[in-house]
Image 1 (cartoon, one colour):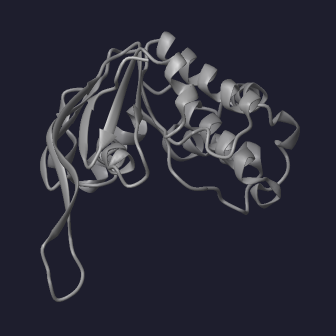
Image 2 (tube, helix red, strand yellow; image 1 turned 180 degrees about the horizontal axis):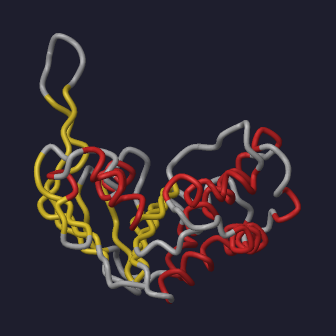
Image 3 (cartoon, helix red, strand yellow; image 1 turned 180 degrees about the vertical axis):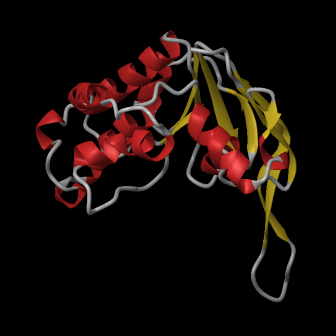
Length: 230
């Protein structure tokens, strides 16, 4: 695994306010953040604090209003959409917020999707099956995603994000809707990815993720800071 890293330099995000009053809503205030290889960073904070907006900017999915996002030495938002997409898909494993699955495919084929879309090599079916077992839904590999609960869909998304051994993993609320045992499975997998050399970011409002982290940061009102000592 390469020593790729993702770095935010002075990134901020504003949204125009609707209505006659105009103005802007600042979701993320200018901040710096570096995610280095071999580390797991947890960002906590209440809903609406800017956590998901920050993660989306780091993932190359949402252009910042100002600042730069550097992935493996390249400024993501200076690239055209096609180049940015190729770099993102080659380097980043993303667990997005919400449920993202193709209903026409089985759970196993949904996990294999990154390999089918972006790799010329034979899809790593054995690894996909191993990851489904690791997140505790191996018995659901052949069913459709419409048959899964919300928590099972989250676990499928984690398996899909890790399929290609990405050098950067960005996980938005990866344990949402999971029981304690299933959440621990997911966090252990993400910890393992960091131990194998990936730069891992977990955005969550759940306290339990902190014990898997090398660093815990708190976001409030669009600002990022160190968490208080526990």
